[in-house]
Length: 247
Image (tube, rainbow, N blue to C red; front, side, top):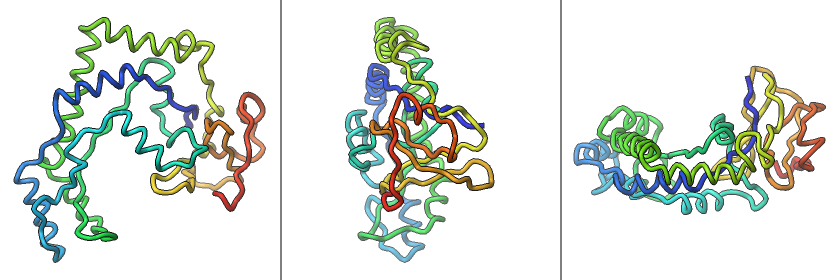
């Protein structure tokens, strides 16, 4: 069953509170056992083991503002929103924040080098490489929940922003209705992080005839079955077809 395909609603107050808690907890720290396991992978691949095989990006925090800038630098100028996921619908029902954490990859020994997939999978089975990022996430979530329960002023700021952005809360005058009704035949697309080419993610086993459409404001990024009655096509948001050469 498809999801409503509407863009997410930001809540900067909640994002800022979450990031402040991340700063209090601190970035992931990988011990010598984690570092040595990474070096052993490099040795097995015939590479000179590095003093620090884990890239620096996995041991520092990124502010919401910097993450926004970095993500937008990968998108074409007309695109206002990024990827498709069910979580975005939650943002129209309550103040929502999305926390990103993860597990490290190996530093490349030279430009253009790609590790075999087994190397990344092997790292995924090691607690010393997984736990630092997961513990950061769990502690951040717990600390943020405690703040919302014990600091009424923080909760009030999150709720006030939600009310303002929606124009009165759930169903408010500024609320964005779903782009398309959920159907089992819906196809959604997302722009790849390293290219402006959209990739279709088909639901079900059969490809459908589609027209690839995007609103001039960049708010609707999905393929609708040809001939379907998309409310964004016929109503609020004028759409233009993307020429095949641009897909």
